[in-house]
Image (cartoon, rainbow, N blue to C red; front, side, top):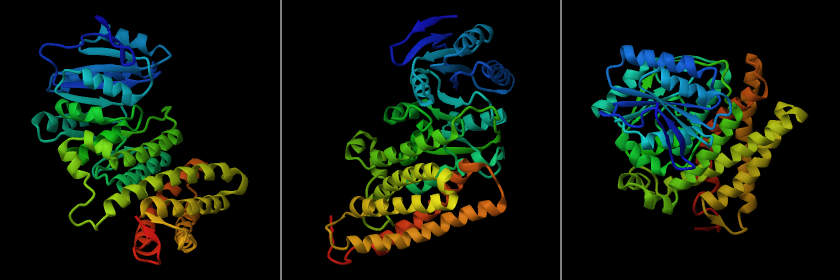
Length: 417
């Protein structure tokens, strides 16, 4: 075993060979935080699979991001026991931080990662890697939502996954089907271009990388996977969802920023141009601003609902939260999204915004009624996920009505920037 020290704030310690001659084709990173129970069986199982059934040269890198249990000690044992296994330790927590650090320093041609629980069937690994090795694709992702995938998981996580990907499609125009499946790979040369642009260090890292890759015109290959939910997963689903919503809002603002555009490759700057063939004038920028307002409104709405639900009940909490957010949403979109200034027309816009609010209330209340009728159960968490889906469906309608009715150019004498 070799042990080397790395700069503070990045990789704090390495175990095993840092680089090999010749370098491996694939570096499979397993990011972990306090996983001493699952780490041993998972890495041994992955090691056996790669040794028996994988045609390319490989390395397994355990990326321990600030574990406080016996994970790092166990990683050292696995490096001693299994050839082709190395380990790195970071002093700071964050899956994205760990992946960024390991991928940046790796000498492999293809950089991959998978969750330590091995929820994804390893049979999908070769279909994931092969298109990158051949040069057919630039990024590859396992998808639980693609046709042909077989997934076993509870309704709560199913709702979260579908709701999140619907939000990505509506706000960031994402075309990939599954942002958060822990089974992805990227070519080294592509990673070198994209990683300096990715700001997130946590769970949103995957999404940000994929959005930037897609906007750059890179080819994303999707592999339908067999996936079985880990019942012992310690991921805080609600906290992760809120963090992801914040990430969507930040990335939306970032992509619209002139400062950010100046840092991007030429292909990505062109993809982010305000006007696109077939898109009405000004709509691209309006969509970005509308998405940013919508994400913030959704977070506020969900927080209000969660606070009011135990006191007022589901339907009253939904109505009050939606009403308060509707007033703020209309005002923010009037100024920020559509650039309408001045006092004249302000009350009219609020009144018409309340009409739009009534449509949203019908959709969300109807979804709660349907949930109650179907008796799916699950408590407040499931209700929040159902409401996310209903709000996502209402978002498209709201934008169309705002653009073509409430804030249509030329209505009244409002000042429009």
